Image (cartoon, rainbow, N blue to C red; front, side, top):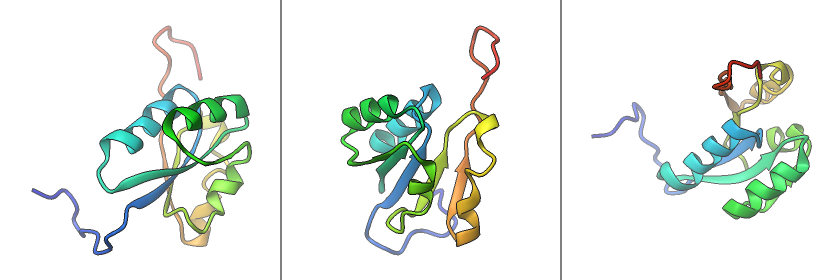
Length: 116
């Protein structure tokens, strides 16, 4: 059974860029890297660069940056996951205007009830 309404005709993985290397970014990075067939995590960006380095090192991602615009504007990235707190979303989805699809993943409140 296929969940794709329009199956991908190309025989290459979808190249995913991730913005956000926090706790929800880690979860989605691992999902792309290990759980989604025909998807490959190609780039990670977050202003907290040590978090990017740690996540990329763990998952073997070579393209890393502290500037989300680098991922959004990368012509080799097919889709961008924005896994950052909502307060950082403004401007993060500007890649959609260039014909790129962006998926904004809202970070849920932490279990202790604090705001993110």
